[in-house]
Image (cartoon, rainbow, N blue to C red):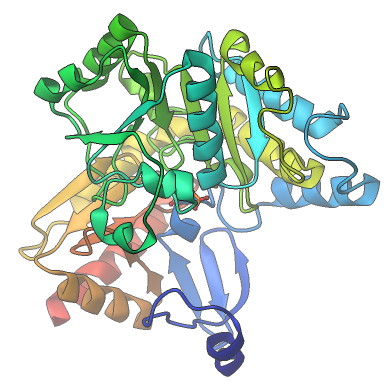
Length: 391
Ligand code: PLP
């Protein structure tokens, strides 16, 4: 199978591992090599409840037996997409109320940018240096790493970048700005947290000049920081909230959410201002609803802080320079990308999956399922320390 993977499936890196998966359950992936691997990556922050959570699988089965795709987005009132949108409205603060369901994070970013331009009638978008928002033309245009962009120009015009967490740069947001887009925790850059009051200042500046604030919660979302969304730690509410990844419990999904007043502008002048065939797909929405229900009802979010503390207590080693991040999105800083790669390789050989951050490869990613147990945290951290010792 590996031969066919490298030959027939388009490759995105010369370094793909080609690891062959037999099955996955809870916090474990079982390889075709007959070995069991503890998963500290969770499909890159996507498997909120671990692999194939029984409630998510049951919801998918039940929906599959009723109907799959029946109509394009926005025509029919279907039980699961409606229930998911309603639950999101109940679980988030006002004025967030109306959700547009799409198929991926990047697509949700594109929808959010269009919505902000349409609502404000303005053209300029301000984003953050070192941000990552996805790989469609729109999402790439607002991502803040030139290395990944320059071969794909021309991209969207009228996009300007400011330094993340820099108060002095906020004056660049003016009454020409349609929106400011930011991650609440910068993911690809190494899980960088802003200063505690940065987002309050950013939101105040946006309000003062009439620009909308779009927050990308595609990674911290769905409980990873101990709150459903990380903005809840900062005492603000965005005008447009973007989510994806962990929302689906293992199926492809994205969404953007806003007030009824802002969102309704996509339905007129022109009508059909944003359309998609599969967005709001009932199978995906069934999985999303089951995931959100379980995240809200299980108490898992209350345990996140304790689990973070345990990780930080255990991951002490002279080769670990720092640990960025919050909750169950932690980036362990080693001295070089080569060192991180070597540690990840050794961990894999010992039955633990870790990864690295997209832009800053010296950071080792830990973003496990929220229901990882204390015992599994001890087991995995033990393997990381062993791997570091062997370097
Ligand atoms: N925004 C952030 C913060 C992400 O981490 C990602 C994916 O890694 C995206 C956007 C893009 O999401 P997707 O890969 O589902 O298009």
